[in-house]
Length: 286
Length: 288
Image 1 (cartoon, chains in turn brown, purple):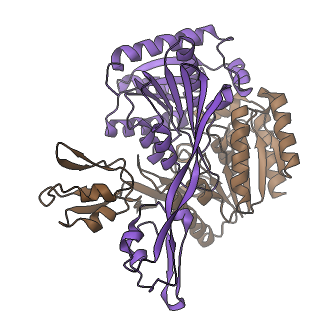
Image 2: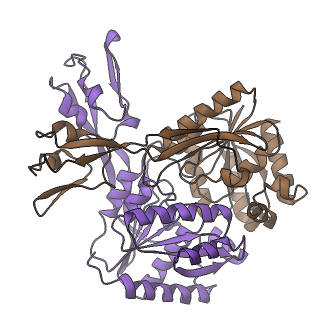
């Protein structure tokens, strides 16, 4: 069983909830797919059993011994990544999309392609089972592909060790990394909060989930911050036939737990938030 | 002066800060534009009423393959660096996977048989709102299902005119979309929260900004929750702590309704004033 936890808006509590779910069972497979801001390793401090280099795209580089600054590449580049300054052709590294076209058309074979090889995938063990996580190097693209690799590895390890449940902590947004996180899961839990921004983002997140025919659930975190808005979100979900898995009240113990590098289940299992999260988990896996 | 507002971690207050800085400048009568670069989930316009003055679809040239002219030589498939051309020669099968295409045009260059033409596909829209005569908001909004927000961000940034004050509300994270947002900024404000997650993501943002070579400072939001490790980190790394915004349920409540806090929180207003003045003094003289 694969359960992905996502949210359109960041900071709604995805990781705290994923961590809580993780600590409610043993053994479990945890896949941290928020590769742009991986945090689960902070709470669970896993061993490093395997490290894999991930090639997060490519960049074009000019060999100035060969380049005669003809500027042909500039006319071909659709990303505005090549500029001519003082008659010298430059590739703007941050803007280059890595399409390789410039290197193919250069009459002097002056452009080569280098791979971005700073991103990593790690896997190891921690106190509740096995864990895989990705860390995208700064400025790199293709986070969706890294998510795919993390998920494939998680499935492989889970199968090998007969681990039934895979918990996936997802990224914010609705782009490629999110699509890679949710495709083919058994359940997707969208964590939202009662705010105008979060509702706007929730609607877009539901739209993207619906493109993949997923079983989706919504939970409203910090629901008591704005009860009217919470009611509004519940209505919206009802009208769109989306199951509410439960509400979580604002609870300071959640942050306190994080500071202690513990999950809420470990830190204060009797807290209101912990109880709400147990209900949500049971509702989903019922 | 171009100031980007960014954070590695989501939900730390980028939008809160962006809309209040914008409001502050707008109320002071400055010519200001706020570009909402969080194209996956743009939220800045929730806080303002404005007149939509124009909107434009962001288009990407995407190939179509004419299988009557195609000889199934496979050259386009070879040229495509994004695996966007599905090619199965024994079955005489070839087609473009639109979602994977970046619109680079390499396949078009590759084809020697005139089998590839291009058509514009919409990736989303960029909208221009006039909030006051002196203040605009540009919103980049990706179409649901489109994979990368970068073309939307680029198109949004092109809408900047010659306003003396430009604010850029960045998407979360430190990958491509963030880099494209801050590339032309004179200064980057990183906003974070004093928790282990906030600190870990802040470190990643700082490392990225060092590589790109940008001036930056840090605002700690929700101060009072969490622990003090982040303060130690800033001190040890000699990073300027620009300002703190205390954790306050009242802030969360008004913000949740899509309301500006200006009326309820004069301290925030004066703090933001000082912040803008300080940044402007140090970084406002560039020609950008």
